[in-house]
Figure 1 (cartoon, rainbow, N blue to C red):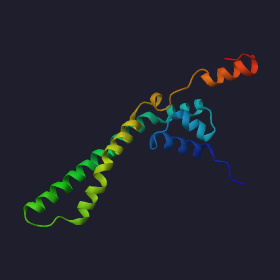
Figure 2 (figure 1 turned 90 degrees about the horizontal axis):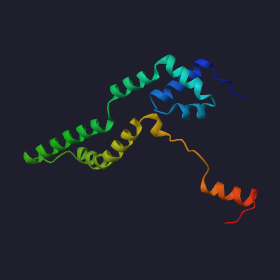
Figure 3 (figure 1 turned 180 degrees about the horizontal axis):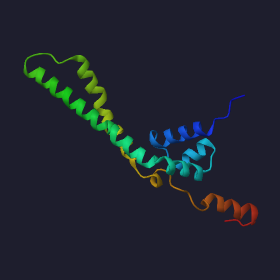
Figure 4 (figure 1 turned 135 degrees about the vertical axis):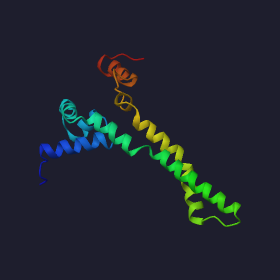
Length: 143
């Protein structure tokens, strides 16, 4: 039988999910089987929002760093060609593999930076299909 996690372990896991993995508090609560109010209380006590901002700032945007690296390697390869040398095959391979991924990475990072409300929109009301089933099965109405 698995040992139940202590409050300190749960707190640490929730903080990691919020700060590093950029999960919403609602998603953390669902994943951990906790009330979202508990998660919000922990977040307020531990300044998770500030920690998340500082973590994001410190880590920078990976796509920008990758772009700079690809740009430098490309410049280096061009310089080699201009000097009559053959560019490094490993550099050319890296450029060829990574350059197409830049846009995907940038799109991912921009989506991850959106405010929590945008990341997990709340569904409200009944779907058209549910209303139709209620009308047919409960109320006996046919469309």
